[in-house]
Picture 1 (cartoon, rainbow, N blue to C red):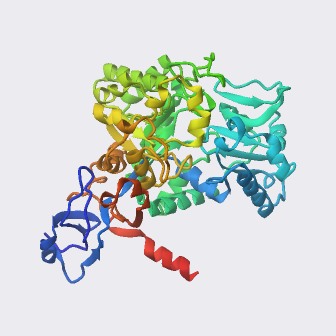
Picture 2: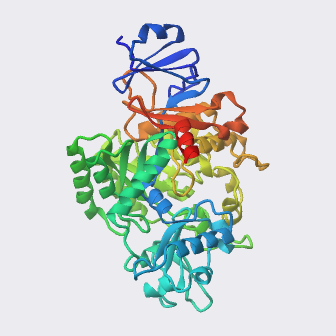
Length: 563
């Protein structure tokens, strides 16, 4: 074996599955892993130009891969009016007021305040009123997305500019919160947010590109070396992102590898397939494996906190009585089966948003029909979110080759879940919230993602919740019971080799083995060496892509301190 360019030694090594390996070192050459060798053999692979990196007891792992994320939108929000991590309603409004003061209106376009990240649980019923915004910005139009991006909050000026009033009907795929006289109250759920598309300023190409680069920087700091962008297209409040990726390829600024999930327009049918195929083929012809478009994202339903997640049983009202609402199936199940069968035949992977138990069943039914029509394929279709999954449907995942795409950070008690969701679900469904343990025991293949900017993109924070089912320092009982916990190795595998499988990059990423790309992350303290309730204290020391460090914590800290 030739001398290594880099040797990483002095810490345990998580290879992508199983327990970490001790007493070994990783050899890197030409951007790839040359070998995993016993510690005592390191001198035989060290040449005069070899760089030896002492891990000092930290964990070495394959780079994390996020299987469901929205980087361009998340990056743009950081550059706009960012409301993420606001402490409460007052803090949210303070941030809006500060942003308005720092960005005065100079024309009709700059008068708009755009952004997102507000939490539904900070406002009564999860529906903030227009008057709250009017009080801090006056007659400026404001349109800010909720943390989960399933609702928009608008000021009166924005509502009037969009021509909306008491006579405006709810769209078939959304709902307008209303005042007593029927006038829009300020919150617009799901497809109702599209009512502003004709008047809100578009996010220009330069801002979208800046958002992508900002997001990439943030994600590399978290050890994320690849991802699946779950929304390629022009959708609701999110910016057009495909041009940003194309520019990043042309200017050679895309460091991570990305699989793009093309957005399925739910108000359009199979006629969109030709354009989807053309886009995929165009990027395949580029021959740059940093970015591919072989996936299609289909929204099967909405979210439980605004009662649009598709459930098998009706939602309850505030008094515990059944309502006539069991959520929305955004696509008729028969049409869903038709589309998925054709996408599978064309060689696409389908990435489902399936949150309620009825949506999960409908997605699995579509996958089953596709297999019956086309035979087994390497589509690696996956269902994201999986908030409520019936026991019988959990068992179907391995049978159908469907992957469970987990957003583990949500799998704990929090105000939004406890106040806006659980009281309105049928008795017994608390035990079915994010049933990761059941899926794992059933033999389902697991992948993991964050849905950032819906929630933090930090894989370590999500892994902590997957293992504990409670947030750090919380005295709550584990959500769904202790039986829904994952062991640490399984959670790490979901975020590395599992997501690499979903991203069709398991041939060269997600595993530490000879021939694989040296896309790696160094973490301290070693999460496998601390008590389970302290996993969240571990942080990324460095991130490597192609055998070179692209983020080093101490260097960044030193630079920050110098400034």
